Amino acid sequence: MGLRLKGQTTGYVELEAPASAADNTLTLPNGNGTNGQVLTTNGSGTLSFTTVGPFLASSDIGSTVQAFDADTAKTDAVQLYTASQRGEVTTLTDAANISVDFAASNNFTVTLAGNRVLNNPTNLVAGQSGVIYVKQIQPDLELCLMDQRGLLLQVRRQS
Image (cartoon, rainbow, N blue to C red; front, top):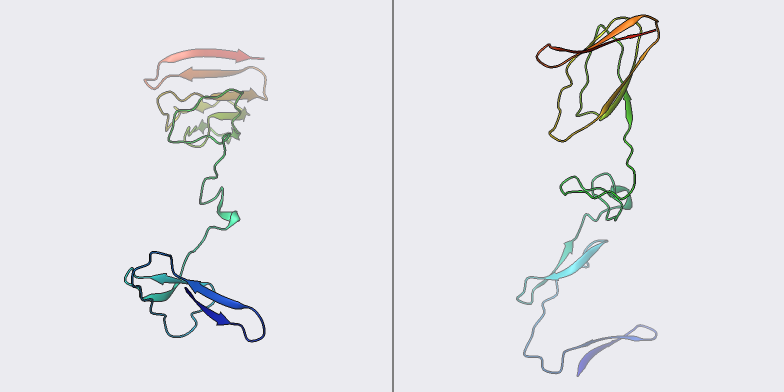
């Protein structure tokens, strides 16, 4: 047996209890609530209007929330790549001493206008690899590569 409320002109709304219902009293809140609110219960039969959310907007996906995508790399898991991967190439600023930050990128390019010192890269992580592509615009410049102890690894004259 249910409770049927007739509409003002036609139709009705009916509330019906389950067949094996025990005594159950629901106490409705005063007022109508506000736009977007829903009825919630405290578990003892007292109903109240509650604002839910905020819900995610589609613009949140990819900025504040990572989208589920089988082709999206996760940074907290081991990755298995089945196709070639490409990283951005970051242009370094030509200066007397050139710094390379491997937290910013893995691939770099710099065009040298004179004799330069390429400082030891910073923020390297074990297993990380990268490329520093060096172009020289003047002939007969020497490019000297040294390790972190200051030992000369290679001298190349490009003309």
